[in-house]
Length: 327
Image (cartoon, rainbow, N blue to C red; front, side, top):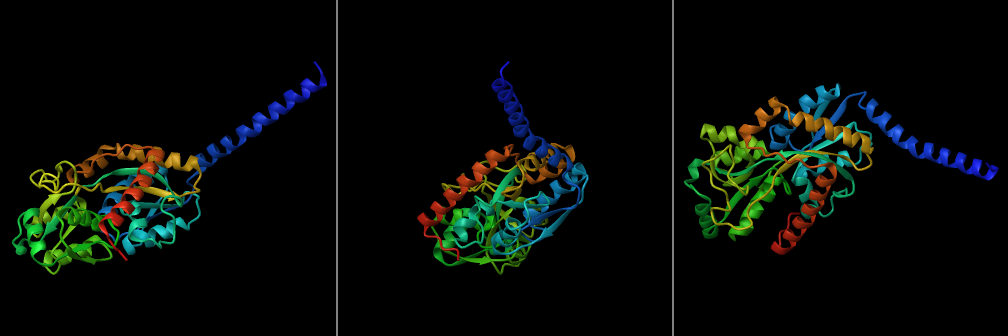
C-alpha cells in the first residue's frame, strides 16, 4: 500500500468523522433540551380562542418535556406585538409562539410589521383548525346571514374583531367582500373584549372562534348565524355554513399552532413537533377539542411552513383585489 493511498484513506476517515460530528452535536443538544423553563408567547388576550386552545396543548406538553411552560399573553395589533417579541428572541427553543391564522394575514394587514412573517419564523406544528362562527346579539332581531347582509346593504353595520389583521377580522372581511356590503370595523385588543361589545349590542356582529363563543351561545346571550368552515361544525351542527347560505369564497380556515424563531436548531424543532404530536393524540386533549369542533391538521414542519407561505400570498392578493386597507 502506497503512502498516497494511506493518506487518502486517513483523509476520508477524518472527513467522515467531521461530517458526522454536527449530527451528533445536534442530537445531543436535542436530548439535553429543555433544561429550563420555556416561555410560550400567545399574542392575544387571555380567554381568546388562541389562548384557550394553546393552553389545552401546553399543559400536557410541559409534562411530556419535564419542564414548566410559562404562558405570557402579549396582545395587541392583531397578534404582531407578541409575534415580534418571539422573532427577536434567542433561537434556542426556550421561547415559542402560539399563534393562529392571523400570523399569515399579518403581511397584508401590516405591511410595515417589524419582522418577516415567512423568514423570521419556523413552523413547528398546527394544533388543528377551529371553526369561526358569526355571532350577533339576539336583541338585533337578525336570524340569518342573509338577513344580516340585506340589512348591511341598506345601512351601515359595525363588526368587532380581536384586532386588525386577526383571524376574527379576516373571517369577517371574507364574508363582507363575498356579500358585497360596507361595514365599519371596530377592533379590540382581544376576542373577549370584542364579544362583550357584541353581546351588549353596541357593536352589531363579529366572527369568533367557537372555542371563545360557545359558552355564550349556549347561554343564549349570543346568536350564531353561520360558521365559516367548508362543512358544518360538529360543535354547532344546526348552524349553516356561509357557503351553503349562498356566499361564495366566504369560508376561512382558522388554524392554531406553534412556531419558533427561524434559526432554532432543527433537532429542537423536530423534538417539539414529535412531543406535541403525541400530546394531540392524548384522549384527554381530544376530549377537550371535540366539543369545540376542532379538526386535526396532521402536517410536518415543512408542510406547515409551506401552508403559511401559501396563505401569505393569498391574503396579500385578496387585500389588493378587494381594495382592503387595514392601516
